[in-house]
Image 1 (cartoon, helix red, strand yellow):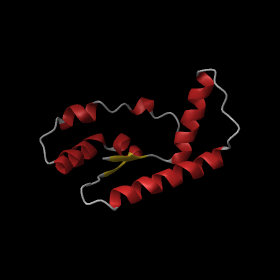
Image 2 (cartoon, one colour):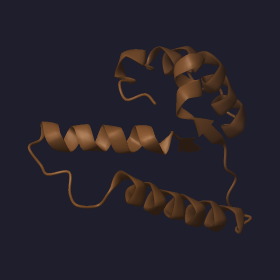
Image 3 (cartoon, helix red, strand yellow):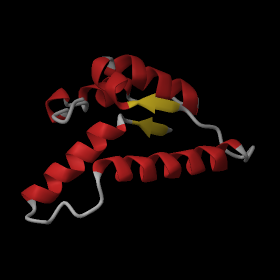
Image 4 (cartoon, one colour):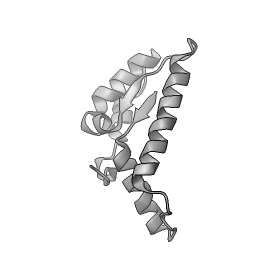
Length: 101
């Protein structure tokens, strides 16, 4: 399972975490970080796509928050196992989605 999240949200979240921990944000711009993340994600996708031994379920972070039961059901089907779908869905805490676009 490969979780996707809007990169602007990821960068915003990381910057907030650094500030909260008293760390400098750094000299690299958000735009440069975004480019680095995109490059890395493209490399990972290419790696996974080029190998038959991997099956990937793409999961959108925002969709999990919007419809946790549906996404948990999709994950259960993907692994072809009876998972605790209700427990998985109940573990999703929408309050943690603080850094939105």
